[in-house]
Length: 320
Image (cartoon, helix red, strand yellow):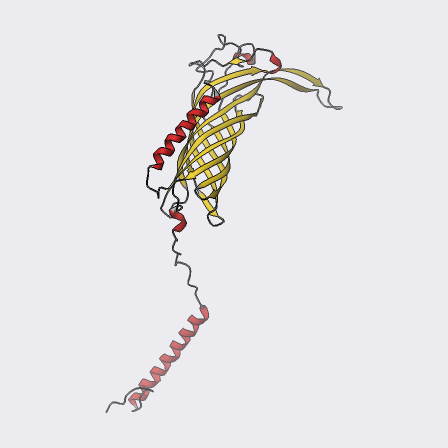
């Protein structure tokens, strides 16, 4: 399936979602966005291999967010559907150059690697929590993202540096390759609001937990593999890695539509101020009140003595 057909598929899903959400009541707290951008991908092999970032990985997707109307909850929850290019660059062979060190130092080895490149086309499904704050009279939204991500690897191709071997389509093998994956994601971004339209930018990092290749305990031989597998017996002793998760760094532009023309409910909710801690203790006034009370008590005691002598307190009525 070509890249154009992937884009048409995601666009069709977007139109269906817009029609569905558009039928809801006007005050719905929803946004629907199209995203697209580029980034890089990287594999974390264990045992460690010579690897580099693979840049130029494109992504396009659809993003849905629901904003809670409750003022105690700040942010949104939602789900994304992304088509993402991923992969890795790994040194499969090298030539050694020995350089004499300074006096008293050992000779150093400098390795000149030849690289293998693997490109993977994946569907990504992140379940997102997006806390945010508003600024500039609700015209600017600054947000962070945290997500649990599930992925499915659709297709792949490979190539060798210097055309040592012909590039070709990577054939998936159930005993060797993992099509499904999972991981975590985090990011930052902002959106500028023009009425019901949001235009923004976000950057995020996907941290893979699953492996793209099954480890050597599950796939213990590479002797039947072709050159599509860089861990073929001709290279790297024919051993599969124990771990092979893939990370992604993406930069995307977003174009969204808010279904509530009035605005989100949280804009118009005034949170009551807490009364706790507003009153301060005035030591001077409390001390003055206590002193006045002590003087009044002394006067009362004096007045009681005077009453026994026939005198009355000031302002009191004389009993007859």
